View 1: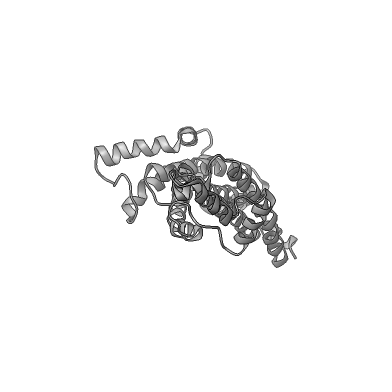
View 2: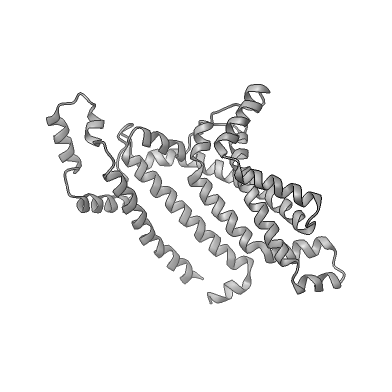
Length: 308
């Protein structure tokens, strides 16, 4: 198991190098001069040229990319062209807000999706099953930014129950977490139902019922446990997606997370912040996938036996 974890950690190196190359290439060929942006539009051409030389912007692409990778490996992602602060500090100050939002949304999705999926599977073709799957389809199809704006209109503007934007209290967290949590709940519901339907038809489920076990024990102890692998996979993917894909929701609710920071950086052509943000989100997504793979071994002992 330790060798497997070490091997997966080593595989993060080529993944991050590939992400770094793609992001750096896009930023390198994006129109705009970072030196001119730092000095201002009215800066003399001589000062701009001197700053470009000082920042190494006149060097060939391979040299610039190699310097970026070397510095990034040491934790130096450069400085923001707007705030002049180190990019690492900018991301470090915003990441807790994104993590809080993503974790809250996943908790809402799990608490809603798994129970509804189990009930839908055990009551297949019932009115509850049809209604829950219909609601899940709406949840998957509904754009998060539109849902967020509707929630602001209803719960903030009309009824005044929650603040429309901001950060700091649980009341600020509820609406953005519900906005992105409900769409994830719809996906988890459909996967839970599908996985449970496959499991409840197995012979060991019929054997458990024949032994006289209660339906609750059969479903929770024997059914759900064996259906968890695809469910955990979807939960892990949703968590990774929420860490990197809550950009629109953070923008709608003015949530001070990494997503909103990157939107502002793209708008202001703050290339170092964009590069650092993408690397952080890619690393986080890879670590989440690794955690899900390790969790498989504790859910299914047969998988753990393969690592011995």
